[in-house]
Image (cartoon, rainbow, N blue to C red; front, side, top):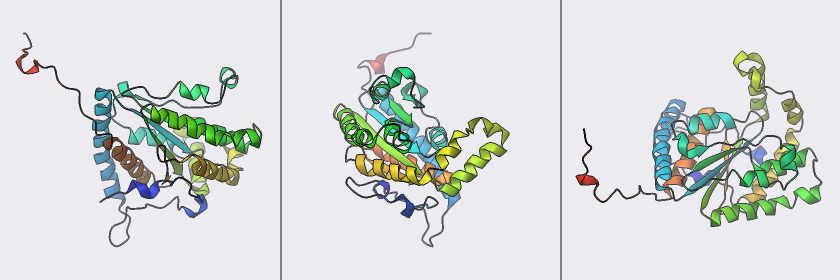
Length: 277
């Protein structure tokens, strides 16, 4: 089955209406009769995991490319689960997953991109941002932490920042995990009902949930204002976790394959080298 990741890509300059994107959908994953095949999807995840593992090993060995993945979603949107399941098996020596939580006093005393720039990937690294600099046009916007005149300028700041990273050799993939309000309710309830998930529940999540429509508007603004040819956004329907994993893996594998990476040349005398007893 051919999976066209461009169908999930936000085209530069296009309008985004998240209400019209079915968070429960499984685009490009139906058989000829229009039936969604979950088991085949899970098997595809296993295959793609193996391929991603090999590509990441190649990325690390070659040491020429830098890859930055930005994950954004509403609370309980599946960012942690995506990192666990999609990047299962990759070499931890070449992968980092910094999480951008509430800024510290030290971070707040500097520009909002300062803490982010320190975490971008170096040569051979794959870095996954669990939340990111986009919090400064999402939470900051919705909660009125700075005035509109200030946060509205940040879209262009971010575009320029990401373009600089690209120009200096970083491949950027930005993924918005799109869940419905109903699905979020079920996942938040599970954090209350399941003892092993209690630690994940924060009362503040309910305050954010009350601002759902404001957040959808903020996400639409971010997607529309910062999806570029060199640093695109992908909107992945994420109510069904297996499909989310398939889609994110397809995006990652196809992106890494486009880098045309090669293992470094072997030592010229490797064929004649004998390991002593």
